[in-house]
Amino acid sequence: MNSIEKIVRPNILALQAYSSAREEFTGSEGIFLDANENPFGELNRYPDPLQKALKQKLSVIKGVATQNIFTGNGSDEAIDLCFRIFCEPGKDKALTFTPTYGMYEVSAAINNTELIKVPLDNNFQVDINKVLLALEDENLKLVFICSPNNPTGNCLDAAEFIIQNFKGIVVVDEAYADFCSTTLVNKLEQYSNLIVLQTLSKAWGLAAARVGIAYASPFIISLFNKVKPPYNISKLNYTAAIYALENTDNYEEQKKLLLEERLKLSEALSQIPIVRKVYPSQANFLLVEVSDANSVYKNLIQQGIIIRNRNKEVKNCIRISIGTPQENKALLNALQNITA
Image (cartoon, rainbow, N blue to C red):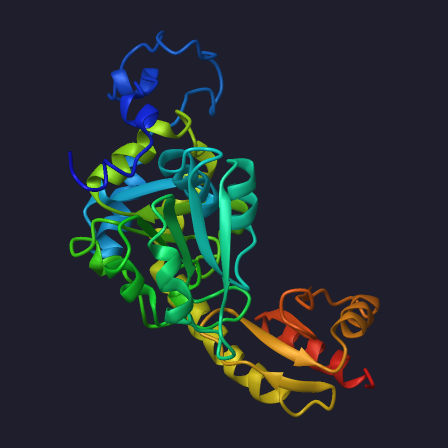
């Protein structure tokens, strides 16, 4: 038994996965009378349960073998699967660093898993001294690291240190990795306990399609495929994802524009009287400290502009997604109209 198998819940190791009709017969020609489908229509057939064509596209773009790739219903499905595969409900624990993406806490609660929350330091980085003792807990199975982090926008420097010093699974959520220059996808062979999450929702513009990706060892990917529902991505979303990955020029153009707008918006926001601080960002959003986050949030809504109020997570901070040049200009004009 390898070290990762020891972390997996015994019932998951013993689980006999459901075998769907499209897994038992993978051909594309013939008279299909095997899956209780309606014989009429354009969307009457079940999709590929393992999304092989999509994984082949991702394999070429990312330089990762298809057996190291899981595709699911957004990254949220992969987050939930991590808890279901590795954490015994009511016994095991997970850890993350706050403030961060709220679904880690929600998924932990759904799966009856205690979530240890270690606050980031004043620079929104991991305080190694605070986390080392927690990593020794024999019931700690998962660590979630969001990098670039949501809502702070910065990459966390301690990810590899934690991977190297933790016997459990480290999940590095790289939802915003397209907007920065760092990724751990190329470290999969080096670290058997690493899972990297990415998504097509952000830079690829497919938030409505709900397509998330997990990169990990073939063994971990086999567990994901065993536990997931049979047809977890619809043909419509699957087709949209492949189309997007075949149009990388559009992706590059939009990403370039968003990065340019991020810089322009950051500089312009810093000149507005009610803005106290604009935090550096490596994502497609900015965390901005203002004089009164609650008041600014309400005022912007009255002007027809919706941002995210993060006052509860970071005092008097709002989070602003990078929009089109026209949308960003409208935001700046609206903020200029707000007095302290």
